[in-house]
Length: 433
Image 1 (cartoon, rainbow, N blue to C red):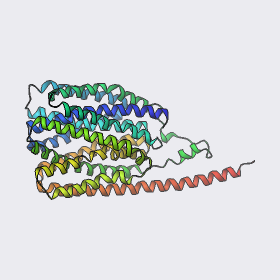
Image 2: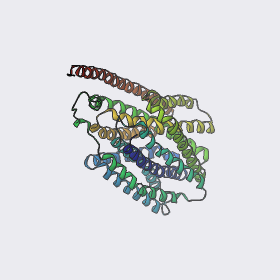
Image 3: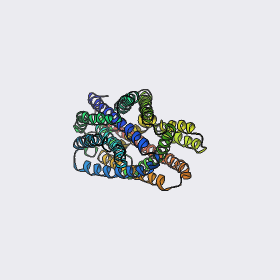
Image 4: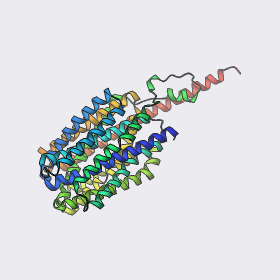
């Protein structure tokens, strides 16, 4: 890992840690307030609103990133997020049981998670490319689980002593603190970035020239279609499971605010700690091997099996345990799966990466969320688990097709490398002594 890569990775780590900490505090508060004061009967409706709001704001973000620099959009979002959180903190005492206010806090949490994810993925892909050190990718990946663990531990331990409203203030403060490393990471990432379309090769005998000539990429449209299908199926599965999980949690704890807050905080802390462990111990070596089967297949396979188990039914405690385990697959998603997806964008040309990221996160992901939420709102409850199993199967098929596409790219790269080496050797042999 070069000095520049190390510096950028450290800035991105701090950025992700602060963003994750702010999000987990909002997530715990938003879920607790809505479930305890409104109830799970309105959860499907707020899922629909959440998908629509995320799609709208993500689309605005998509337009902004095409007109403004990444550093500027990062600063704008940090200020907006803090301002909206402060507004919720101010209004909560006056409208403590207002459906619209509690739903707005829930929606703000969803939007914050979606936009934060787009920001960190875009910043990392601006900073690193396919030739960057895998240790740099793994290091910045430690930030989010570390922030989630610390925030979850804090709110889980202090839930009985600090009113829910004040966690909103802390979340807003973290949004403002993140301004410096967030903007600085983007600034550094954009300095010295090389557009692969403008690279020229001066000689065929140098390794640098050879490596640049060997920069073969996946077909952009085919790649984006497969990744989009993967993301859509994944989001549908996660949305359906998340809904069932939240209903089971609320039913088991009887809408008690302190119990819900403590449960959410401790769970997010445990998920963060396990994610940190997997990220530190497993992710680096696994990603360095450049083997994508396990990183991409483990999560859909696990959720498919758990969905089969859930379909057999059971008591409240049984469902809570199984759905909590299903929710805990977030450990693998955050530590390995999503990092691998972020790295996959380096397999298309740099000039097309931000568009691919924006389309998948600003259009495909929200559309899948809205579709799943509408199904929860309008569809029969008996169809939820079969729909989850079908979506998990589509997820697995998309992963398989994507792996075959990337295997073809690697084959062409090896073939071209062999051809270039032959040409280089012949040129060297023909040179006069």
